[in-house]
Amino acid sequence: MLDCGASKEGSGLSFWGKIIGGFTGFLTGGPIGALVGAAMGHAADSGAGRLGQNPAQLAAMLGSREQLFAVGVVVLSAKLAKCDGPVKRIEIDTFKRQFRIPPENMAEVAQLFDRAREDAEGYEPFADRMGQAFADRREMLEDVLAALFSIARADGPLTNGEVAFLQRVQIGFGLDAPAWMRARDTTAERPRPMPTGPDPYRVLGIGREATDAQARATWRRLVRENHPDAVASRGAGPDMVRRAADKVAEINAAWDRIKRERKL
Image 1: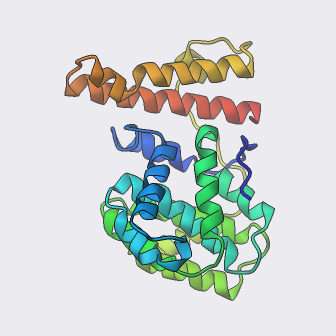
Image 2: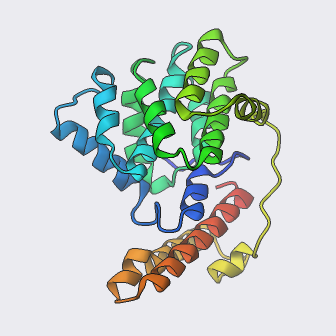
């Protein structure tokens, strides 16, 4: 089972944070786990049953881009890991490192990952739906494909089955040959430069001597206080809500840097 505890993060791109920070108000309207849970609950209520029995039906149920992204990347990662045999711990760890799901959402993601990895079949509808929904964000889909390359390479050289899987995802995403080559060539496990920007400790308003627990508590408090939903509930206008979304993205980015520095 996918480990539900906090993982030791490596140098992979923070895709969840990238989505949250890159789309004002896109995923800041609720935690990733709530989106995954809602999607899974919808599937169960509609009689979809096991994920592998009718993946096309489940993919069609995911009407919002938030749900589609949250569920799609987990399903694609799990089924890719399965396509060359039993899923290995290093593949799970690479998935966690590449997509950096918040620890508080790991339980829901673990449940979906475990269901999806029962077999390698039925991933195509998710790739196709993501390609349609994010046709205006091809660079984001290219980042997801690069992350999938990393998962495929985690346990050794690419197999024929993994290449076929990734090629089908590329087609579903609507990516061209140059995008394929960029995704393929950026997945060597080499260090990536640390992000630049404001001092993350100053963003959170804490000193570098703060303990891990203090830093985590401050991050959670700031996200709660600045969340767009909370700001809107206090009667703020659209401009204030948009600024709150930007603030939350900045807070999350600062916490992400602190976690990497401290290897949390």
